[in-house]
Length: 126
Image (tube, rainbow, N blue to C red):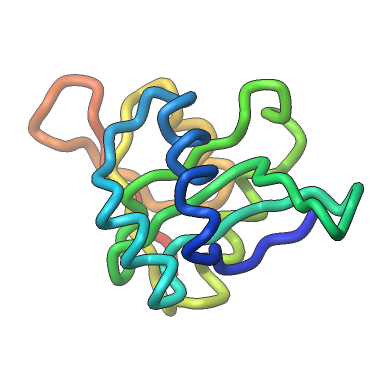
């Protein structure tokens, strides 16, 4: 598995991964990210001629709008690799997330603070 910037042709596959994780994000945001190094994909190394999108991360400047991994591939370090690749491209990243994914961001070293909404948090990592 390796992480790289998504191509415009991969936008439907990225949307499929994000939709599978029940994340709501505009296709225009994903498409714009593919054009400016803000939409990242984790792809399989099994068959270089037919790389399969295993996970995706969408940045809006330095904010993680969405990160998701195919259900069968979770727990394999793909989400971590995506966030680390985002940090390689930006000096600092932020994210807003629900309580159930807080351990993921904590394990990545994000500084976390509660938001005004119940069970919602904001994290930042430089």
